Each structure stands twice: as C-alpha cells, then as structure tokens.
Image 1 (cartoon, helix red, strand yellow):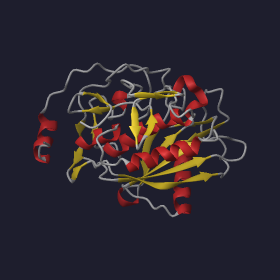
Image 2: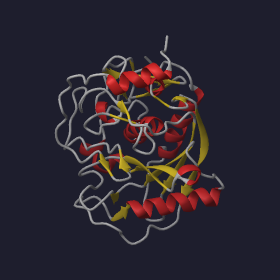
Image 3: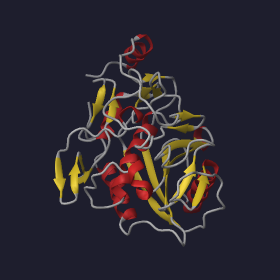
Image 4: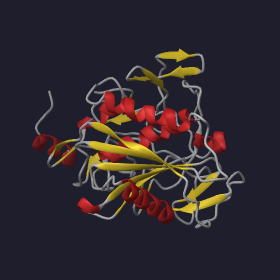
Length: 317
C-alpha cells in the first residue's frame, strides 16, 4: 500500500542516500533547459544503475496524464526508413492502450509525485504529422561525418511550435511533442554537446506554466548505429533504435518535465540512471529479442529507475 504524500515527502527530505557508484563519461545530463540527455553508447556504456542514490523530490510538478504528439521532420532530399513513422506511431498507440497497467516500464514512474498527487501512467496519442518544411541553414556545427545539416535547439523549438500551431494541437504541461528528424540530420543542444558524438536524445521545454511547450529532440538513431542503436530490432525496423530513446525521454518528462521534480544527487533522472541497460529478454521475434510486450507488440526498451527497489526495473513496482 502506498504511504501518504506527507510521509513520502518526509522520507525524501530526511532519508539517506543509497551508495550507488557514479557513472562515467557522457555529456552533462542537465544544462539549463536541456534535460535527460541520453549519452551516446560510444561515450557511456551501461551495465546497471548509475548516478548517486535514489531520485529526490525538488518541489516541481510531475505529469498527472500526458498527450503525446509525433512530428517527423523529413523534407525533400532527406529520408526515413519506409516503416519508420508507422512503427513509432504504433508504439505511442500501444503505450496509450496499456495506460495504467503494471506490465511495462511506464508504470515504474507512478511512485513519484508532486504536491497534487502521484505521476500517472495515463497516456493518450494525439496524432502525428510529416513535416516537409525545408531545414533552415545549419544553426550549429558538429563533428559527425554522416550529418549534412545541424539544427540548434532554438531551431528545433521553433519548428515544434510552428507545427503544433499549424495542426491546432495546443500546448501546456499535459502535452509533449516529439520531434523526429530524418536520417543524417545532426543537432546540438549547446556549443559542446551534439547528437551522436555526445547524445542520442534529450527533453526540454520552452515557455512556462499553461503556455509551455514540452518537447523532445529525437535524432534518427541509426544515423550512427555505434552511438545510438542498442540492438536488437524486434520489429525489424530502424525505428526500434529510436523507440528505445523515445521511451527514455517520455518517462523522464512524466517525472521531471521542468527539471525541478525528480532527479538524484548527480542530476540523473529516472531514465538516465538506467540508460542502455535492458535486463533480461522475455521473448524473441525473427528479427531479435525483446524485453517489453506492450499492447501485444514487442519492444526492446531500457529499464527505468525505481526508488522502491533501488534498481532498474522492467515494469511497475
């Protein structure tokens, strides 16, 4: 049985820190509004819990329900695999269909809370849009040979807002916009942290309160497979690699949307503490093993951190 919020708040404030070894390598996980960077595998390979201690509550909001939207920025001259949008859209539909169930990684976050109550695994998929608007001139410079354009965080923000307004999707703290960019498209969160060389995805926000846009930058993971593709691909698609880091950012937005809710003493959010750690497989398809079955479909997703068990978990605790 869950304790009352008052007792839980006291436990977070007064409780000691569990002894977990600090992670090594990778970019800063929190830089101003940039949160939960998934460090590229080439700079930060995981074998278990990282960071230091349990997640602690810092007074900010969690999501008590979320509607997610997918934007696929794929203008002329660029490409995504033929099933990329279909498989990612199905993932969002599956996560929504299994809302409230304890059987996947999304339920693990329901143990975290704010002063209004617990975070809820209550997800709706609001829809998707293939954005063929041309990319602007590069707003950043990266060192990745495969990329042909580099988008700054400001450019990604601007396009998220443009598409959300175009589609009439609205905004606010209960919505999140996932910006999926095409193959060979780079991005930089700041002057030193860029896609594939330092990170594979991150989440952030622009605006505040009821007027904010929560968004996630989702580069095409298989642009540099050694950096951002954990494999296997149970759906036989390049989308599998991106779906893994999508789950990371979705779970972190639910528990720490504005960087002032749940993270540990090292600044790691629930996804950061278990990045690139998948635990045991529960089955396989002709394309590869999987550790999650969500609405009857297989996925290979990193685990999420649980304060309750002080470990990375594959389902609700």
